[in-house]
Image (tube, helix red, strand yellow):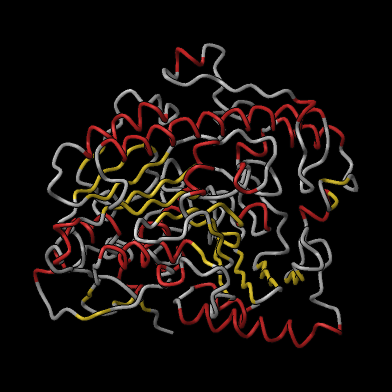
Length: 498
């Protein structure tokens, strides 16, 4: 069977006619953040600045990453394509060495071709560099992207440099990602190490342990450190928003705030369960009159690129499909994206369709029609963590296809070494409850998991073999398989071979 990559060579027209009034974009991507935010109802979280953005924008309640893994998720955010179609199956750094096909054209490259200034501040975690090429980076003094205040100051200075051109800023703090197995980078002298940020300290005994985690002392301690890291993140967001107003761009800039994947605890990050994938998404379109609204559209991170392009008035074009098998282990021919602008140097350009779609037109609708189904794809986190999952959400149901289900569920290195999981190992009881399921059930999963998210929000009752739900089960299986085929997923062969 021959496979094709849906979107490859992109060129865009010159700056659109509206450039005189600029349509700028800032995409803020937190690292390993779930819905631990005041605006999402968390009573302990001290996040006044993210809450301020939500009060002046639109808060999505059903927004999902497509894969709960940092690097792979970011490839989706910046390409508009599921990572199984681009080869970016897992981490780009270290021994993983996963990388997006050279022929894929990313959001910063598309906007750069359209006359935008583009800048990255913070975490990158993408490859190759020429596929995800930014005009500049401003990383000075950011303490590994932990000092969000300095990041915001760098952003303000960059925005003010060449003000006649529209800009795209990709702003990616490292918080609240773990700094190590047992640390969230909360230095004792934090006010010195992170200049401009006064630490917010939490006590373990005051923490509200979510239902997907066990209520244990080590968990409470880690949650206290996690929430402190979130509070530090929030301070810089406020500085960034203030800087946007001070440079005169509050009313001509689309601002998105989201996360790459859920919290860095077993049971969330790397899974396709709700804590790992149902994430914050706050969008402020300055043209909207309604502020502080909510949106129940089911959106995923493949929708981010189409939405940004829609706002900017940029229509991507391409040279047509290329066989995926020819992209592996060879030098691209002319026009295939070896150079960021090669696509517009040869061939007849044609419109193409990304895997996602723009939600800009329904941004101010609380319950828009036609936004009740979405798909997700995960294959690796680190290279040692092979556990492909494909998931469809349709209405109130979710079907997870655990393609390698005979294997025990693997652990990201930081999650395995965390005090939370090490304590589980020391107790050595596979029937111990880890949140809402046993340790054994967490580690050993069936081939298919079907959940009714309304009746069973914690995803503990698998309906895949329930005779009363066989029609739903078979319908979702068919949708999932059709979607895998349509998006050139190499793992769709598992329906036949296994």
